[in-house]
Amino acid sequence: MKKYQIMLVGCGGMGHAWADYVLKERTDCEIIALVDIIPEHAQNYKNEYKLECPIYDHIDKALAAEKPTLIIDTTTPDAHNEIRTKSLLRKIPVIGEKPLADSIDAGRDIVKTADMMNTPHAVMQNRRWIGAMRKMHELAHDERLGRVGFLMSQFFIEVHFGGFRDLMDNPLILDMAVHTFDQARMILGSDPVSVYCTEFNLPGSWYKGNASAVCVYEFENGAIYTYTGSWSSKGFNTSWEADWRMICENGTVMCDGNNAPTVEINGKRTTEEIVYTQKTGHYGCFDEMFEALENQRPAETDCHDNIKTLGMVFGAIESAKTGKKIIL
Image 1: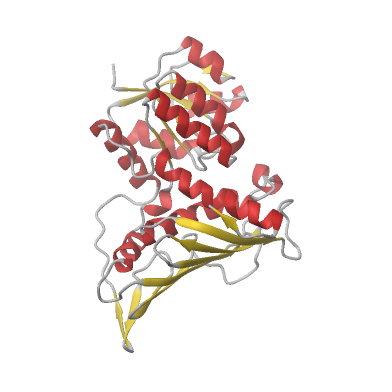
Image 2: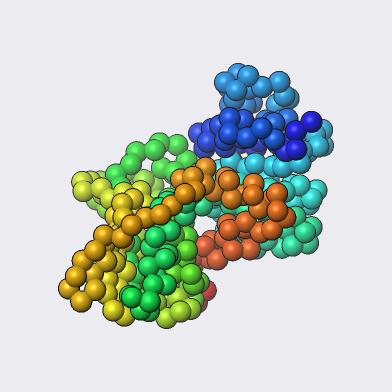
């Protein structure tokens, strides 16, 4: 029997990355059950990956019948609280897609349950595992540059998903900006204390909810972070990792999110060398999650840390609704 007896909950588009990783990259994992409210989706996975396992249409039925040692949750955000809480209450470790939950209260409930059951839960934040972002973190703590005063990110992508994102109330902030907010926390090595946000839709937007936003955060270390973004802007797309400018005490750093950052100090510009040996994106985060399980330590994106990123998301949404600065 393999070490990780996995129940995969949610057999939609995002689940493929997780299934590919555990089935093709690891020798200690097997999928013992598939769960999806649309059984046909689970059957498609079963056929694609040539699995010999049962299919369930509800987490309750699956947990009653199976004994997994790990839950992978790739359901839509509105289902995360139920899936993760019920799994943790059975002392089954959970790793899953972002966001942690679809509300800050639900996120706190998940963290509370993980604490109560002393059971780990980590959240996918794949955009931490990019060489340029790790280098930005190094530069934010580089003595040459001094203290960070101002961090800015710009995110502009024209994307037509269809499906649930087109119908969400806050598609950009909840489903995408959560990544960029998490990158900002990682870069600064600090946590936010307040936010002011305005949300809106550009003319011609095909999203029901607001797909554009401007946010201003104050961080514990005194830095100001601004986020400007849109999922319905036409032309001049940024990278999915966003464009970044970091203004420090002695100089400025520019980065397009993918390539090596450029530093300017006293009028002299240099392109920084990236030394990055980990896997990139999802697979880098996967490796970290499983290494944390192996060593019985919190993952870098453990729920206790990730709740702070979720706080950035729902603080911004609350600010946009109330028109007020929100203390986090």
